[in-house]
Amino acid sequence: MSSQRKAEEAPALDQEGTARLTDFARACKAAARAVTLYPSSHPAIRLSLARLVEAATRITAKGSVQLGVVPDNLLLDGAASVRPDQAVRETGALLHDHMIGLVTLHSSPHPEGWLPFLNLLAKPVDEVRASGGVARLWAATGQRHLELQEIDYADVPNVDANLKE
Image (cartoon, rainbow, N blue to C red; front, side, top):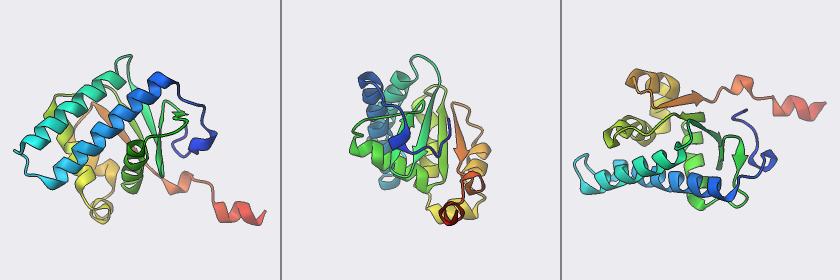
């Protein structure tokens, strides 16, 4: 699956898949927000991490899943919601802004296992880029429950060149 595939071109996600994707996106967005707003010992972070673990456990119940990231949407194993929830759109935008093109989620770790990912999303995009990019920063965490594939614009067709043809 190409992480650059447009959501409009993707097959439609079934109702169960849409629900699992929406639950995960809502939990991820809430946890990312909590990490940026509160100190690490705050109860809001513990609660949001617990919800993220539950949502990730549900979305990976049948095995690993891939979340394709497009500028304002997420694709679950190559399929898109017919009418994506706002949280799905916003989570897609957050990941895309951090140059994440594909997330492969293998399992859900204990709540604290999500903190390196959420802390990465809390960093300003310019800081992430200046530090070598999201793939390099993620690899340095040593986490294995999810894989992040960074967007490589060298692999994206040159739109200007295609328009001139």
